[in-house]
Image (cartoon, rainbow, N blue to C red; front, side, top):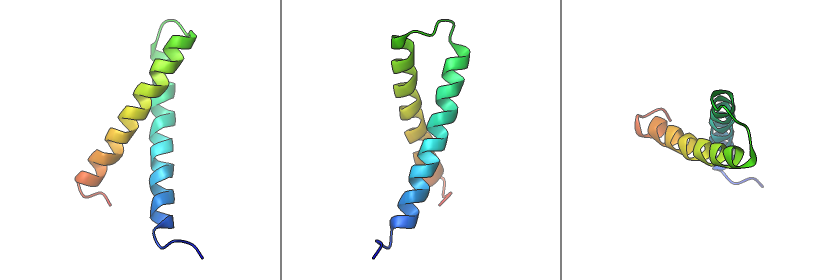
Length: 63
């Protein structure tokens, strides 16, 4: 039997993944050189920003 909070957790994970993907693509588009270090920094920065975006939406009463 599924946990009662599973749909909410799945929605949160999908939102986080969506933000992360968009912000990672934006980072890659805006940088001038694409090397391994830039990819790592971009992925981590996008993950932090995605977490902040999800938290800000929740704090504003979005869900």
